[in-house]
Length: 109
Image (spheres, helix red, strand yellow):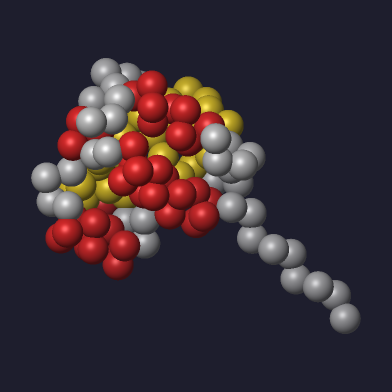
């Protein structure tokens, strides 16, 4: 299935994404962090809404699981990379990336 190298390539292909160290992981962010890749390259965490997380975990339970703590209740979800195709991972990354985009500034009247 997919690999850490493909994860990195797919994430960095999303407009405005930068990679930076984040504790023992690599963070991928635009305005905010939307994904982190474990140092061993086996798993990644992605930021979904709680509803998106519930759907991913229900429909693809072998690949997705909530992070086990308050982060998980906020939508952070662990992805088992070897259980995802590039297309599945790309779709998940794009979902998380959209949530991390800068908020549009309010227009003055």
